[in-house]
Image (cartoon, rainbow, N blue to C red; front, top):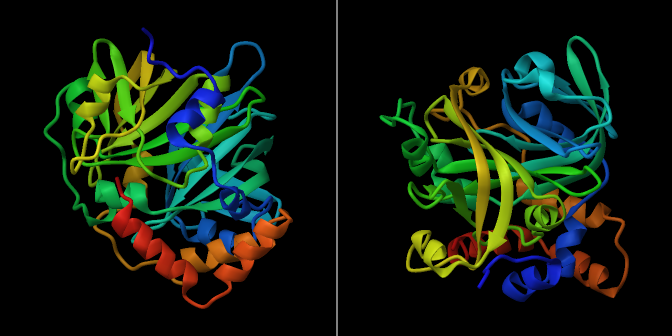
Length: 338
């Protein structure tokens, strides 16, 4: 009997529905806080998806001095092509998703949109979505506590087993791309098993964007890395979400077994040195960027959200209480990592 999840109803029966307040965190532009975040980030993952003909989805690590990506205005993001490991994957009209990391900060910034223009030096993105993602993936992976190191791993299986962080790119049937962070201790993030790559899902922002995308367009692309190392693995294939008990148990951490595990069929795995990671100089962490306050930015985004109604009004009233968001995040990170 198949344990694969075939539709949204089956998915929600396993993980529950996305809470309404989760939609309030998304805005359709780059506000001042998001612009500061992007400009202060030395590193991001950028995905490009194409729905015409056979669906194509690719992802690249991007890194350099802060400012290699910046807002041209509230609706347009500019990404330096020289900062990308794979600048040639972008095409005008493609869906775009990015995940921005800033040293010492656990939360990440996600920006989605469309490729509006490409010239010799940069890629211009018409922004459609912007929101802050929680810090759980980076906490679980020990991302910012790593020291520069060269891991003693030989071959695909050993590298995936040792990986602790993954940027996962997915895309819906309309070609809207998205990149989400995944993080776990060694051996609990990725496994190569019987010709497929497996990964589990942990508690996160509860939007379940990646799951919903896979159900409508199953191609995935990912970058896996070992914090502290400049070596990465590019992984791509066809994602299948399921509840296989034996595989889920392999990913148990602290006595907690994930509810679902995703199987990547027909995987293509490429190990390489990432010049983008090297340029970003992520480890050891130096000074934490000034002016980046994830909790305050989350509050601002909820207040600026275009969602209306009683629930939205109640949420906005609650988060207006000084310290409410910071306290809520701290409790969530302590109680709900797994």
